[in-house]
Amino acid sequence: MPGEMRSKRQEPTLDELKLALRNTGLRSTAPRLAVLRQLLHAKNPVSHGELVDALAHHGMDRATVYRNLLDLTDVGLLARNDLGDHVWRFELRQNPINKSAESKHPHFTCVDCGAVSCLPDVQVKVSSGRRSPRAVTQRKIEVQLRGRCDSCA
Image 1 (cartoon, helix red, strand yellow):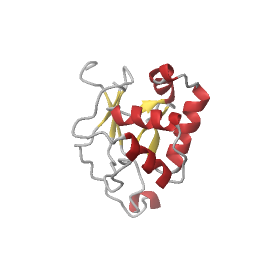
Image 2 (tube, one colour; image 1 turned 135 degrees about the vertical axis):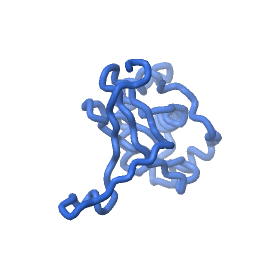
Image 3 (cartoon, helix red, strand yellow; image 1 turned 120 degrees about the horizontal axis):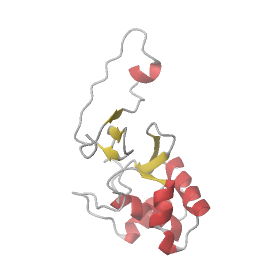
Image 4 (tube, one colour; image 1 turned 60 degrees about the vertical axis):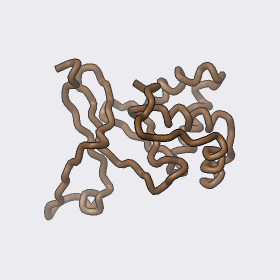
């Protein structure tokens, strides 16, 4: 669920988040902080629509949320992925405070209900062959697994 707390992550203070934004060259605004905080609490990648719903109590409209998602993605704080269903989902690319804690991991999408899960503890080995695209040999790829989740199986 988008609002579930991530385990084993201590939440940065407001001052730390403001500093992290300024260090990327972005101004520290209330909408950016709200989007960042919501994504800090998200257990799985979150769509724009889910974020709009979650941040409605802040009075932010769809365009404001989207602009801030793009800004945070452009500076490298967020990853934007299409997991095969033509819906962009956003998640923290790195901890805004500890940039060395970048999190690259595969995702699982249920082919029946569409639920998306992060798989941080799953390792997938990709080997390049003679005719592999350059992206594979340079390890500039994303791994996405599809199947039936436990609830749908």
